[in-house]
Image 1 (cartoon, one colour):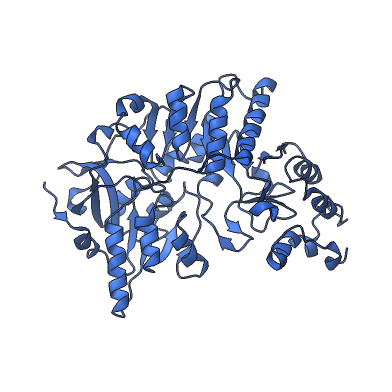
Image 2 (cartoon, one colour):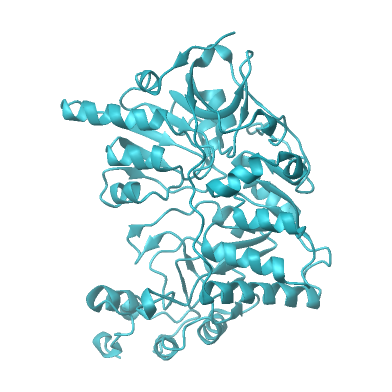
Amino acid sequence: MAFPILSPEEAAELIHNNDNVGLSGFTASGSPKVVTAALAEKAERLHAAGEEFKINVFTGASTNNWADGALARANAINRRTPYQNTPDLRKRINSHDAHYFDLHLSELAQKFRYGTYGDLDVAIIEVAEVMDNGEVVLGTGVGNVPTYAKLAKKVILELNSKLPKEIYGMHDIYMPLDPPYRREIPIYKPSDRVGTPTVKIDPEKIVGVVHSDSYDGIKGFTELDDVTLQIGANVCGFLIGELRAGRLPKEFLPIQSGVGNVANAVLFGLGDAKEIPQFEMFTEVIQDAVIELMKMGKCKFGSTCSLTLSDKTEAEVLHNLDFFRDKLVLRPSELSNSPELIRRLGVIAMNTALEADIFGNINSTHVVGTRMMNGIGGSGDFTRNGYISIFSCPSVTKGGLISNIVPMASHIDHSEHSVDVIITDQGVADLRGLDPVQRAEKIIENCAHPSYRPLLREYLNLGTPGQTPHTVEAALAFHAAFKNTGDMHNVDWAKYGY
């Protein structure tokens, strides 16, 4: 059947105040680009006329400036989950103009199918191709599209001309049955396929097709500096040590890596490390560094939910699909972040921390414990289930005014029970098998910046008895010093009676 061709503005008129709206994609990759922008313009027009207009936005992860950015600037978002990274939306969240609830990425699709968040009114899905029977070929990000396409009362398709039809075959679309009928997901190595190359949508639900013509708009990461390069070298040194000790199999294990400059540095370091053999990735995001590793022959295969690539690298991949087709598979986040699969495959989990405390707890989300940065994302999915769980961060930021190693994390996303190794530019703290004080000694000595080690040792020695010797009055003294003076060095233990 032929589907109606709509303008972005016509599509936006099909979405109403307080609708639950599911968006395709995972990061900016595969996220809508024109309907959401038109929806933001509609919101601004209605607000100017004194009418209410906000929607509840459910995605795969973060989106882009055309979606989260435009909608946040128009104050058109009521509820939002499971992850975001747009500055405009971050401001709305921290001022409570938008109600954001943070969630492990592997959980949202099934929670929606369980009925936790009510009905899904509309799904907006970016596609490379639409077939007459309602089947669609997705683009560079999958996210929760299979569930949104199944549950939505109405589906709007964005047909992006930048996506070649030849991308067909790169996706592995599979949706687990819900309990009590769920069975094991039959994936036993990253390259196994268990689903279909397309998403099947009831054609009666497709209310229109909107044309677009844009790459995902992702900027390249900044150049690696001495700090990020040293973190990458330290991660590689640790993994080489595990290989030499026989704690990693000689064939190596699949790798998961978060997004950002530190993650890029780690990946480039793996490419240069001669003792690390060719490897595969089982991850939620593949970024530019992985594409370079594939061209080098270092990364043999990548299973992912999203190709989070700069526009230049995205164009390169889409114009060279014959080379990349047998090296990549794109999956829903229920598979890419599946605890079952992560545990079975023995994934090496490598994620980034905002701060770590001396006992091994990790803050991934909240600046100074209060202001949401991005969200927990998929780090918990991998951290809790990985073969080894590694967290990395610089030892200091803001020119040394902030120590990223603190007495007590101001917000905890990953407890000490889930963290095996902490790595900074200063060194490596392998925490496996250590009690809390032993962990603290190792983190202070190996990971904290030298200028903060005396203060951290003083805190550890304040003398409160117990297995984990926190001193409640002084536990957040680093954060208080930064709030009051702008420099965490300005801690005065005497203020706390010590």
